Length: 265
Image (cartoon, rainbow, N blue to C red; front, side, top):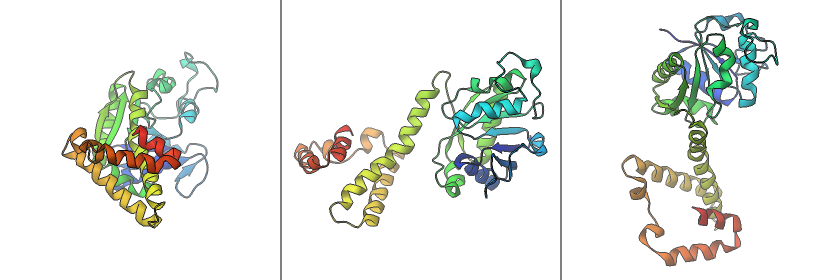
C-alpha cells in the first residue's frame, strides 16, 4: 500500500515530519496549519485533498487534539460521545488516524473510532527543535506506537520508510514512557547548560566551554553503545576519590543552584 499522508499542525513536529517524509519518499498530501505560514501548504478550512489521504497525522498540541478530532468526525461541537448517528466524517472511509502525542491516550480519538476509523499513536522519539535535522535523527531512531491493529500496522510502515524502528507502548504505561522520553531529551540539555555555565565562570570563553561540554556529553552517551551504564561511568565517584568530590562541593558552595544539580546527580 502506498501511504498518502495529510499532516495537521504546522508546528515543530508537523514541520519535522513533513521534511522527514518528503526526504524518504512518502507522499505528503499537505502540511495543514490553522493560519497561513511559510511552512504550511494549506491552512484554515480543511482542503478537499484531505480525502485523498489514507493516513491523517494529528501533530497539534495536546489541548487542541479534541477540536481537530471533532472537526474530522464532522460532529457538532460539545455533543457528547455516543451520538454516532450525528457524525459526518470529512475523511475517507478506511483512513487511519494517528496523533503524535507522547502522553495523550488513544481514547482521545474515540469519536473517530466510534465512526469506524482505526486510530493510534505515532510519537517520534527525537528532539524536533531544529526541523532540518529531523530526517537524519529519525533515520535509525525510534517511534513510539500504540492503538488499533491497523493503526499500529500503518505506524510501523511509516516508521520503516523513515528508517526508524518502533517501540510498542504498553497499555497503561504511556505517562511513564513519556516521562522517560522527557528525561532523555531534555535533562542532558539542562546539564550541558549547567556544565558550560560553570566552565565559562572560570574564564573560559563561552563558545569554547559549550563546545567542549557538548563534545564530552556526546562521547559519554556514545559509550552506552558498547558498555552498560555502570561501565560507562567515569570520574571521581567511580574511582572512590572522595577528596575531589569534597573540593567540588566546596567550590560550588557559593553557587547554590549548581551545587543542587551536582548533589542530585
